[in-house]
Length: 205
Image: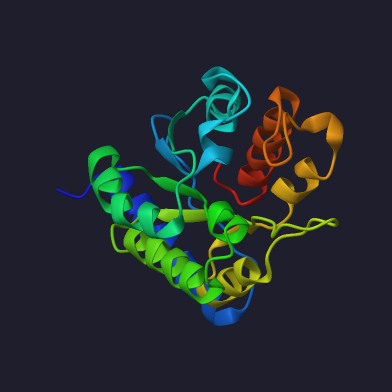
């Protein structure tokens, strides 16, 4: 039997298809009050530099009144993330995947083409299960931080909801960092707040 949540996911996928074809800004299907969100990534998601309760997924859960699972693993590269994502999607059956991955690939100068391929496959894994995706841009190392261009390219090609500069903006401010590559508690608060506001703009909340 098709449930109300199934209808929401089908609607979300139809909206993405239409948006991609029409070249409009992305939107998301409304999240059910009991929805699960999977926050997937590396140390930026895990909350390195602060305790688990200060990570952005924990803070987003409190803001949104939704279950937000922290599936971040410190030090992970995108090829490793791709290898574990499918089982997590099947285990938790989230309505939304927040994808923030690739920082370690960029720090370690892995081929950008391989990072792009892995991110596209992650998006495809989620969409193949009827799960919508919100992607966060991750900055390449440098003095003046901005999201690596491949994230915008992927977002444009796939039509996923996209927040380009929140990570770069936080890591550009010394007062929001615990070290050179990780936010402090205030920085994670800023990330959670921006995601929450954008979920509202994307009509998910």
